[in-house]
Length: 77
View 1 (cartoon, rainbow, N blue to C red):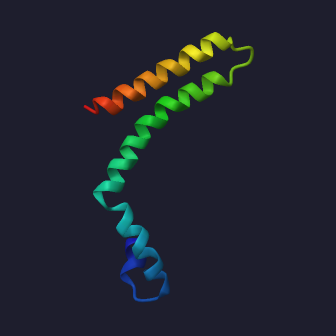
View 2 (view 1 turned 30 degrees about the vertical axis):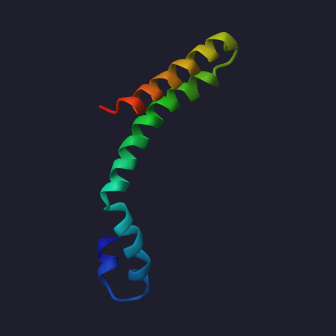
């Protein structure tokens, strides 16, 4: 993408905008945060798809994940 963005044709104009976006600090931070959140929610998703899963256990797992995400939101460090 870097090479394309440095050329002077139509492809460079198309490539330079996403390149500028993904190299910004805000984007990188968002991806790091998203990675942490998805690691947590993926485990929950897989667990909730188990066959013959007890509904009470599902609710407990969801509450635990919600509490963990809330804790991460309240105290990001």
